[in-house]
Structure formats: C-alpha cells, structure tokens
Image (cartoon, rainbow, N blue to C red):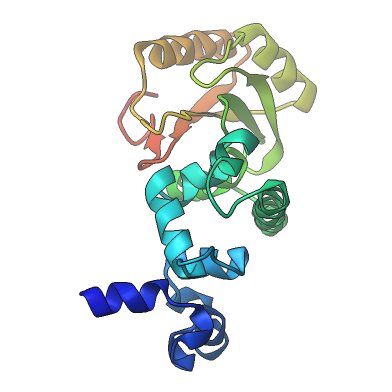
Length: 233
C-alpha cells in the first residue's frame, strides 16, 4: 500500500507510460479513465509532493464528487491548494461547452414520449445548477416540443412559482400539454409538500383551458423523480 501511495504522489512523468492519464486516454479512450484521471488532465500539473492525479483525487474527496466541484463558487474553488481563478474559468468554460453540445444534440428530439426521455432532456438544462430553477416544456397534441423555458428562478432551496404566468405562456405557444420540472440543488429529489401543492394548483389552472400536465420531474444529485411514474399526475 505504501508503495502505491508513493507512486501516486510521484510526478506523473515518472509513471509507466501506460498509467499516465493523457497517454491512457489516447490509447484506450476517455471512458477508460477514472474521474480523478480525467480531472488530472484538466489540472495539468500537481503541487510539490503531490501528482496531478493525487491532487485531483483530494479535490473530489473534499468537494464530494464532480457535481459539487462543478457547482462550487469561485471563492470555494480557489481556496483549495493548486486551484486559482484561471483553472476556475477553464473548468466552467469546459462544463458550459459540454452543456451546449448536449443541448444542440437534444434539439433533434422531436417528441417526448417517455419519462426517461424527458429526464435525459431536462438533465442538460437543470443539472449542476447552484440555484433552484423551474422549467416548463410546451408540447403540441403529438407531444412534440414547441418550446422549453425557465419561467422562475430562486435561491438555493426555493423558487416562487405563479400558475397564471404558466397559463399565459401556454396560450402564447398554443400548447396542448406541458411538462413541468425543477431542480433541487440540495440533491434530494423527493417532492416536498410544497412541490405537490403547486403542481395541483397548476393542474387546476390548466384544466380550465383544456391543457394537460404530462409530468413534473425533479432533478437533483440522486435519481430524478417523475410525478407521472409515481402516480401523482
């Protein structure tokens, strides 16, 4: 074990070629690397007495994983050894590029016909946000996407939601159905009593204009929660 720890803290240039993260990625592909190895390639260098992989592993432990690392504020990020404003900017830019790439791919999704497909679509919009966001997807009578937008934004644990604003937007897009979604930055995806109550209020408001709610999805660090799958719609 001591030999393994010692090798882990050695400069990566002293590692066998096949163990070096960059060479391993080029030979086997990115999926063959661990989170720490991928992060080490991003960090590029370690700190005295600690390789980039050891530094990456320490950061993942300190933050509790990649999602929390990506959600960290600039001050939280930069207070760790080996990190600074430049690396914070680079990491945020990399995350945003990935998000935009996935959004462009999802634009080819014509219709949402299952909760899993909806969850995949919403993870791109709501995953890793540090604040609570309430998103509405407007659909036609074939469940094809007319528009998707963030209607309400809140703090880390709350967002005020107004059914009348949703009704207004539904009429604007001439939607036949909607899918509601919001995120829980805390990570827990179980709906609160407030979540259940506001869903019922929105449903009652939309019934008056003959528009249905197909689902309400909660995105967090755990498994996403679908109201439809749990019989709450």
